[in-house]
Length: 83
Image 1: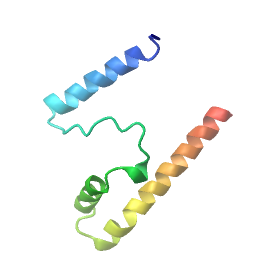
Image 2 (image 1 turned 90 degrees about the vertical axis):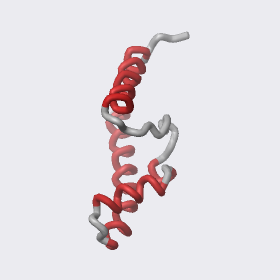
Image 3 (image 1 turned 180 degrees about the vertical axis):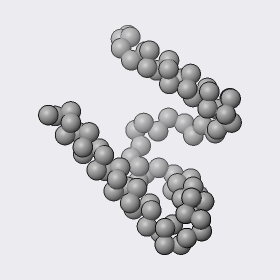
Image 4 (image 1 turned 135 degrees about the vertical axis):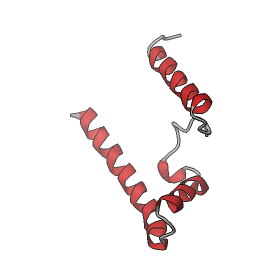
């Protein structure tokens, strides 16, 4: 078994422990293989609604903007790795 990435995984586990046990955050699982637009819409929309301060326009448009931004970031990262 390769040991490449083990220090990073150990660090991630420690950060996860800090957020869940010390700061009281809820862990939603490992979503590394999920695309943003496939993430649980109920969780995403709940937080958008709170942040948008009940503004119906923002609640309607922000999810699409977030998906677009996520897609652009992935393309830019791919270009950076290819260059």
